[in-house]
Image (cartoon, rainbow, N blue to C red; front, side):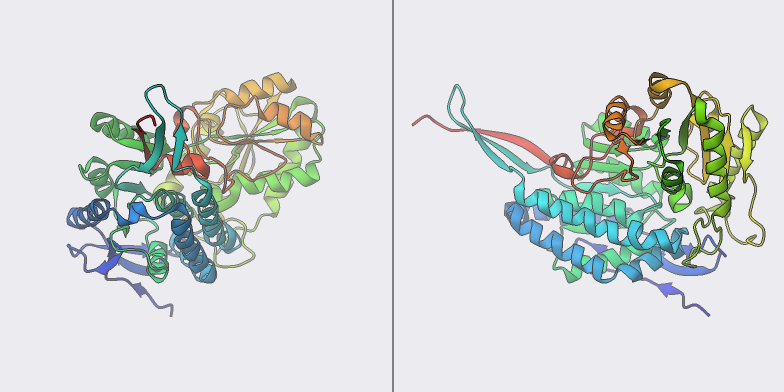
Length: 483
């Protein structure tokens, strides 16, 4: 019998403390509904305590006064701690939200450490103070911590996205309160342990798992100066409205409906496995997934057949099995959502090629068969709305101009890719796609030292790279006298 993990304390202001209320979150495996863990559910009093501790750090000034190099050293310690426990971390994320083990070890465990390493590099090189010549006198342009930050983290890649926010805040010298989602809170306790082992100063980081009510409380809290939210566009609009009303800084990384464009010279034997890996990784629960595949009319049937053949080879099952390619979605609600879109696609003019149901023998879990639709109209719901499940659409195009137009005909603009035998041709087309990231012959949809974020409904602002650190700073000018 598998042991149930029981957590009874919260990381508040960089120290373990008893939760202020008795609420518990039950973490159950989306594979078989077994109880994996119970963790405390943070409440408003815990949030108040975390904000108080963070504001004390700001008032003290010692943390903000550390150099970028000193903060980089701490960030690297956190990265090293995550790497040392990568296998354990991967297992926790697989158990709590169903990511296949083969994805978890890199996508859920190693990648967060790479993100932190990128922020450490940026912190060492970032121009926190720059001297400029001025009309009234020389000026010092200073980048100072924005204040207390709140990072609202989704359930799909919980530690990866936590580290996108944590690394930037640490690099900038801003204290941060992380709020993991109730669907996947367990892994955040390992992150908290790593932070303590790395010697995080008191008050600098809090980790408060909780639901939407806690998130809304933190976003509107008068002691929080900056909000970084990752989640759906609908929720992001609410967060943005609150921050706008309060004139509060915010970064929004929201949904996507990204296009993977296959050009007519692409080698399908190479392209198809990579592109479908991008579309279906983490069981299709990735905001930057290439869930719209654009295929040239001259090779359309060939592309659809190659995609279908590959989908049929995918192993669906227990995410803890290293041979599994596609596991369950995170919850019954998410399964219902995906199945609703599949039903809508079947009722329309799209052609269901593979999947469309629930896999046999996996009834206790929240499973959806990897599903491929062909002959999809880009105006249809399955092509326009984010499904967040293992559903892929194939859209026909004539010529590169139409491919670019279809890719850009979306409310979203987060990611994308171009696949071709001619890299220069790929770069030229990628540069026409209005997305925050567009890869050429690669599924590298996130690069740890470069900015990540979206156009249009995919969000506001950027995370990672120098741009990600700058989002956690305010700019101050000190004018000096001549002489």
